[in-house]
Length: 419
Image (cartoon, rainbow, N blue to C red):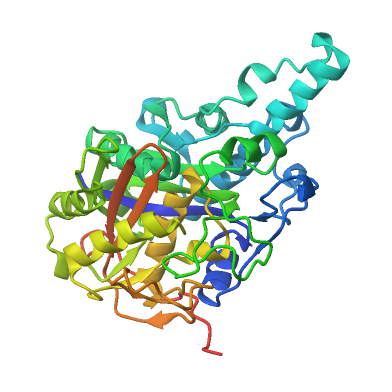
C-alpha cells in the first residue's frame, strides 16, 4: 500500500493554519523574539519562537481547558485543522481503521510547573487531579484519539528533534499494515522556566539577544539554536482510499530511515549520511532524483559541519539546494520534523524553495548550496527532510509529488509576487 498525505494542520510562531504559515515562510517572515510568557531576564536564553495569536478558548470547550497543557491545546486544534483540510471524518470509518501517532520530547511542562508550584506553596490538596496525565509525553496521542474517536493503532514516540519524522515513518507502517487513516506528527511547547532550564545543560541554545543573529545554522557565526513552539499534524491515508474519496493529495511518503550515531569516542562517523542513503534506498531512488533537502540545521558548528559533510558526501559539494526555514521560528523539538515535511510538500506544490533567513556567511567547511536571503523558484518533485536529536538520533523522510495515479497537484497554490 502507498501512504499519501491528504491533510495538513500547522501551528507555528509565524502562522496558524497552512495558508498563513506558508505565506510567512515564503516571504521570509521571522518571529523569533524576546520571550513574553515569563520574564526571561534571570536566564541566559531570552529569545524564542513564540506563538502569540492562539486563544485556546476559541478551539476547546471549557471542560477541556483546565485538563490540558498548552501542547495539547495546540495539538487538538491542529488535529481539527488537519482533518478538515483532508475532508476526512474518522466517524465515517470503522473504529479500528483510524490511528494516531504523535511524537513529544518534553510533555506538558507548563502544566507540570504550575501544579508543582501549587504543591510547594499551597499543599497537595491544591494539585489538580489532571496532573496525572497532562504532563505526560503521550498525552497528545490520548487526547486526540478521544476527540476524534481514533480506536486503531496508537503510539507516542520520544526521539527529540527526530520525533516528528519518526511519527510519520510509523504512520506509513500502519497504513501498509491495513489502517485506512492515521494522524501523525508532533506539536510541542517548552516556553516556561522549568522547561527552559531542562534544556540549558546540553549547551545547544544560543544566548544572543539579537533575534537577527541568534540562530544562524551553517554560518561562521553560529552559536546554537533557538527554542520554538508549535508543529504540524498530517493526515496519512492509503492512496487507494484517498482516490476513492476524491480528495486532494499533497504527496507520497516515499522513503524513511532512522539510525543512531555511534558511541562518542568510537572514531566512527555520525550516522546521518547512512540514514540519508537508507531513506533513498527505501524510496527506490538515487541522489540525482532528489530536488531539495530540508536540513536539521542545529546551529552548532560541529553538528552543522557533520550534516553538511553528509549532504555533500551523498549529493556532491554544492550539489543540491538545501534550506532550513526553521530559522524563522526556532527549533520546535518533535514538532519540527513534521512541520518540515509539511513545508516540503508545500514547496513541491508551489515550485519554490523557502529561504534560510539569517545565515549570510556560510562556513567554508559546509560545502552545501544553502538557499539564504530569498526564496528560490525551482521545479520540485522530490524532497528529503532530515532531523537529528540529542542522544544520537538521525531520521530522514523522502516525500514526493503525487503521481497521476495518486492525485493531482493543486492548481490554486499560493505563491506571492517577488518583492
